[in-house]
Length: 202
Length: 150
Image (cartoon, rainbow over all chains, first blue to last red; front, top):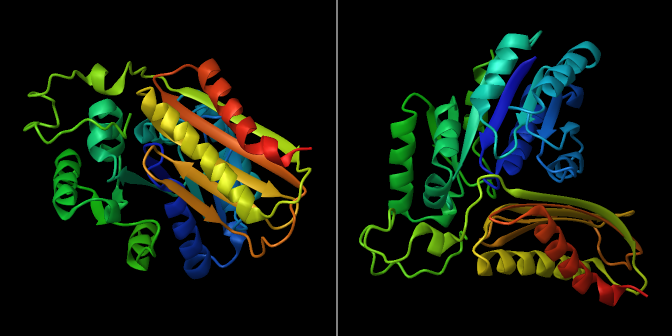
């Protein structure tokens, strides 16, 4: 199993980007939908994003009422073990809650995960709220950025060029090693970005 | 609180409010680090003839009401999102982070009277408590749906 973990604050656009990645993986990488499973983690008792993903015919496993980086870390391992034994998908996309620290999830997976061939973290940055969020939740936002192998600055259509330049600069300061892309999830995402994310698993 | 209407034109250092009289609390109210989370699922029987477009309007209005409530009370919206569907083809996803409301539908045909709907919603809001959030969410939903019930 190759894991792609999506991190990023609440409302940053993770689900929309996952829909795009899932479409790419199903179309270009693994035509059999059983080869792709999405694990949807939400802090609320009711899932919303899982229903959006399911309405597109995708296979979704739900982990609700907590965060897989803390309260539900063992549930994540149990879910992945169950998937490995019963489905053995090539790809598993994990959508974290917007309050999650991806590095904590990575720590759990490295310690207890089985049958995992690769793990890649995609961090989604909300360009529209970047300034506010870095004031309100600086530690969380910094951590979500620094944990990413790939960083997608989303909603670039909602900020000025000057703002975008500043965001890019701030992101690079926190995580100079990550591959950085500017996107708008409401529009088509260039396949080359998803190729890069998927390529890391080859 | 992300839609605060504080005028920054007089602030040279907007980021840190160095030259503003307002403190962060003035701008944003009391920020609790742990957000209030309210999740809700309920099915409704629609007693009157109503089509998808009209229902969509009401649900978007519901979200807008919650957004305004949060802004007026200086709360910070983590995310408010809903997914509504009927037993046929109607489905609606709408969400806001306090800015504009994003709406997506995956329906092929909304041109029929909707009989039953299931509403799923989650609101994650900083600066308030779960009881208050629940009360506001349900009150505003009642206001929107009452006209469709017998």
